[in-house]
Length: 278
Image (cartoon, rainbow, N blue to C red; front, side, top):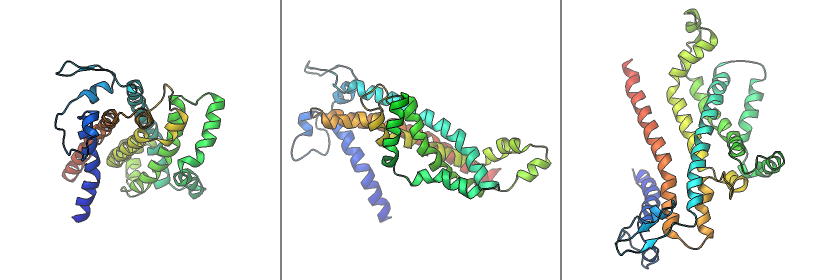
């Protein structure tokens, strides 16, 4: 119980602090000692950080943030990266994890080790080779290049995660073959529905990893039309101090992952409730 409380405090305090800062002015954020709640809450930071003017009650007009374009592009590109990476990852990983988890074939362990090896490699160790390669073939600074390099991490990681899940599913393939299913038909119509919980969890992990990916994005696409939200947010740290815009951009960057996790977690909970009744 104590550990749970500590984890909640560790997680929620930064979120609260950024949320509070996003509703404060620069002057109020700079006050010392700091305020633990906004005395005069304003949405000017949330509005101007995405490129809109904001008129205060006093009539003063707040102009859009200088980093608004980067934030908007970052959110759009991160969404494209997350969706594309998730779809491709799951299309590759589901049959791959099933194959390694339930079938026996020659050199299985060697091939599995080769697939999982990249999980043990830190991203920085392959960053320079990717940068040189993508620069030469014209993929540096592109969404396609970033999707490809992100897949080199999500595919082996989600494969490793789903491997044991598929291995522990009931052995029903022979029964399905007796009922007239082909091996592929049994996989699509029997195994995939049985493994839907693990597949949904794998999709969540792939999306969150792609959305939060920073190292590859910072080097390969930062400052281009393909920039994603993590390096776009970090750009506020190197510009003229705009703490309210930094906080507002972080709040915007948290919204899509929260929506995805909420919707899919709710779906998983319904699956668990429904399964014992079947």
